[in-house]
Image (spheres, rainbow, N blue to C red):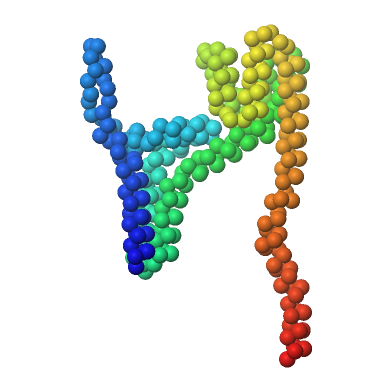
Length: 284
């Protein structure tokens, strides 16, 4: 019973800590500069969700914003919505956990409820991180083919921007979307360098960032863009083949666990069971 009370107190304490972590910033004060003087006024909360975001650690908020950018800024995802879903999931799991524990208090039930509470809090983070990772991986895989298309278009006589537009219109997926967005940035008045810098910030693919830097240097120093595209496309194909070979070399290591713990025991049972039955019959 002492363990049950300790686990219950721990669960309640963590729940209160999560709520306090979000709501501690509700009473913060802000500095307002007026007529050369500084005064303090209480923060005006526009909404409950905004107070949750303002109360969270800045580093965590920055990480969420980067993941949303890497995921392509989906309409259904924002920092505020993520925090709202966190609270909804935590409250839902708290209610369900309480009903689960009240039906039969036991240490294992408290542990399961506590684990479900922690998991529900981090589910939105896992989802947005998974979506960002999948999108960046798709960009990395599509980059060599896109560079090949742009190289062919430039060698055929098109300019770099026209080649990028052609690759964006003919392509599919996140890589084509990023090219089209870069062209849209330039069409609304942003400089080419700023548009390329924004493209570099919207991805964590080192290959794409290296390509953007190479294009920026070629644009700054007057290097032939066709030569840059040809070299970059060749390097990207080589790296893609090397990554595929690396993944293939990891397969024997990855299959050791299912082989030892799943396949071999069943194989031994199938092979040794008739022999064991025969020995038992012989001794009886």
